[in-house]
Image (cartoon, rainbow, N blue to C red; front, side, top):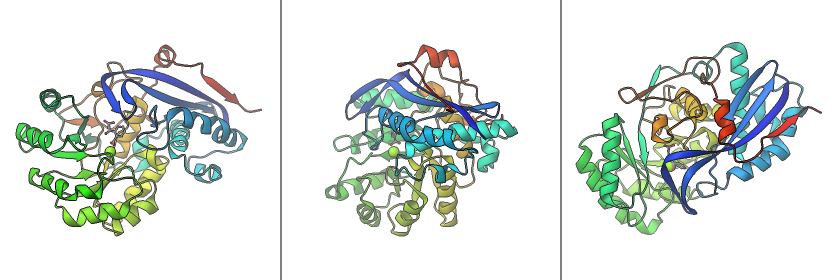
Length: 369
Ligand code: OSB
Ligand code: MG
C-alpha cells in the first residue's frame, strides 16, 4: 500500500492498579499510538515501551523520536509498503525493535483491513480462544498480595505469575502456593538476581512452579544455562529474547526450555511468529507475554497466542485487570479464556474520543511531501 499519512498520539491511560518501576510507581500507562492511512484504509499500532527505560533500553519518548526522525520518513518515501517488506525498509536503523513494532502493527492492521483478513488468520491461529494467566506485581505486604491473588482466582484466571526479587520470593511463593492449591503458578524476576543466588533460587523447586522467568540480566545467556543445569524449575527467558536467532541460540545452549514471546520486544508480530516457528521445530513451548497493552495490542496478542506452539497461558489478561475503560471494546474473561477477535485486522475499533481525552500532547501528523 501507499502510505499517505501517519499520526502519532501519546496518551496517558489511568491504571486500576499502580505499576512498580525502578523509577517509582506509575498510576498511568503512557502509550504511544501510531495511526497509518493509505489506499483508503487505516490501521493502528501501539508501542509497548514503558515511560522509563527499566524493562529494556527503549522508552516511550525515545521510540517517538526514532519513529518520527527515521521510520516515518522511510514509510512515506516508499511507493509500496507491505508488512513483509518493513524489515528491509527499516534495516538502516539498528535495534529499536519496539519502535519498529509499533509501525509494523499499524501497517499490518491496515493491510489486513483492506483484504478483510483477521490477525488470527494472517498469523496462523488454530484456536478461537486462548487460556489466560495474570501477572501480579510486588505487593507492599503478603496480606495485600493474597487479597489480589484471591480476586484473580475468583475472576477465573488459569495461571498466576508472581513478580519476585531478593527479599520477596520464597515467602510470597509459599503463601500463594498454599492459597491456590494446584492452580498453575510461575514467577518472574525481571533480572533481579545474580549467579550468587543459585542456591537460594533452587529452594523454589519445592513449590511446583511452571517456570522461573528471566532471573539474570538480559545479556547473560551463560548464567541462565548454569542455573538451568542446577534447578528443576524450568528456566524461561523474556528480556533476553530479542530475535529468532537469539532464541535458537539460547535454547541450544540450554538457557531456556520455555520462551516468553512479546511481539514488541522482538520487532513485531512477524518476528514473533518466526520465533514461535523456530521454538516449535525445537519442541520448545512458548507463551505470550504482556506489556500492559491497550485493547489494540491485546487483540493482536490474543490472535498470536492462538498459534499452535503457545502451550501455556499468557499474560493476556482481561481489560479490567489494567483499565476501568479500555481504548477499544473491552476484553472480558469467559471461564478463564479470551476470544480471538475475528473481524478484519485487529478486529477491534479504536475509540478515538478516548485518544483525544487522554492525550498528553498534541498529535504529530506526517504526510507525503
Ligand atoms: O516482565 O513480563 C514482564 C509488564 C511490563 C514489563 C515487563 C513485564 C510486565 C508484566 C505484565 O509482567 C504483563 C501484563 O499483564 O501485561
Ligand atoms: Mg517478564
